[in-house]
Length: 270
Ligand code: ADP
Image (tube, rainbow, N blue to C red):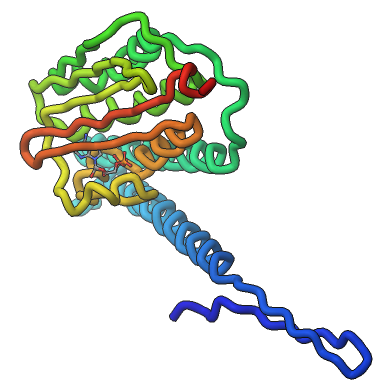
């Protein structure tokens, strides 16, 4: 049950009088609970790959000494398989740790330091470059579309991180041979970058939860793709830090579109 959200304190103010002070601490309780849940989640998320690494290294040792046969002839096929899974789990663990650090940096961040003009073309080119290996492995074509020469105001490194997370997801949650479009455009108030895929899509009931830390629509698939459940939480923080927002539309089996909107400088200046 939720703890009572009121603290009451009696103060003897002399002359036979007592003052009663009541403070509403409901919000403080809520923040404390969110923090407790987060720490519990982090511990759980860290324990899973660490546990897997422990088991896998034992299995590897076993395979090196011949496994079931016990004849000290390494079972090379098993050794290769376990080594590969150890590499996969440690990559995931390392990603988890860096994304947690990134998230905590963003959460502690003051509103953006002096926003700089950033070339949207350059951001998109950098993102496509980073995702090329993963996309090629699935024969996914990533295309930059839309208006060229746009300028967004903000922190270029953060904007690249945000768009890269969206493109990485688009690739991860799409079947082979599909395409991913990164389109940019501008309205009077905003510069937008949309990432559109022809992937598995997202159930309507998951749509408003996917931006929560650690929320994954399909845990098993996210694990397979090396996902941490933090990518979209990071995107949302970056959007908010920039005074913008991120939205999603999706149809199961058809694909998803994530749109990052950043206020243009003119609206900021009023
Ligand atoms: P993850 O590391 O699991 O990808 P994210 O925070 O980036 O974590 O995304 C949260 C969840 O949202 C994913 O686990 C997945 O279920 C869903 N998701 C995100 N992007 C897409 C997409 N482009 N297509 C389908 N599902 C997606």
